[in-house]
Structure formats: structure tokens, C-alpha cells
Image (tube, rainbow, N blue to C red; front, side):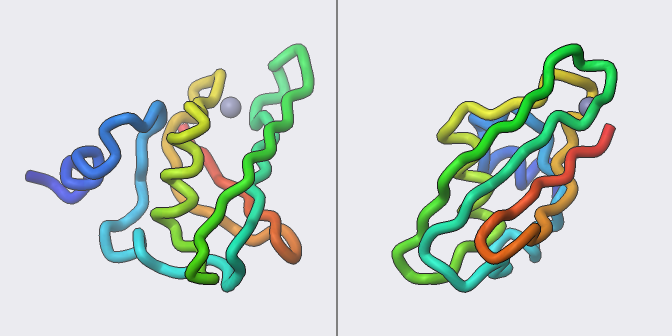
Length: 103
Ligand SMILES: [Zn+2]
């Protein structure tokens, strides 16, 4: 089984493709118990502006890549374009995290 198949098996309900290394799933992105994922539609040709914000929690005080993925899944998140490959999360400001989707 390939690495990405193993990841898909861990997140069977994901409506996007996770292209993050297995070793990075438990990496702490932000040392807070609450953070916000902010998704801005990535394609200029989408005719209406689209921003979605999701709140993620981890009472331990450390939010990991896995927590963020589970948060997107819980909210049934999917992109409405060909950018379906989740490649990374970056910290946008104090407690806002931006996912990057490639095509
Ligand atoms: Zn797109």
C-alpha cells in the first residue's frame, strides 16, 4: 500500500485528496486550543467570491495537521474546482490557518 493510500484509509470521508506526508500528520501547526481555517476560492473564474471559515479545536492546546484535516472533513468541505489536492497548511495570522489546494 502506498503512503497516500494509507492516508486515504485514515480519512475515508475526505472530499478532497490529501497530499501531505504521513510523518507530517501529527505535526503541530499552532499551539492554541482554537484556530480558524480560512479558505478563499482559489480560481479567478469562479463567478461569485467564496470565503469559508471553520473553527477547529483541540483541548490539548496544540492543533495538528490531523486536527485541521478532521475539521475540514467534519464540515464536509470540498473545493468547487479542480484544486482538490490538499498540499499544506500555512499560518495566516495569529490564529488563522490557510489550506493550500493544488491541482
Ligand atoms: Zn481552484
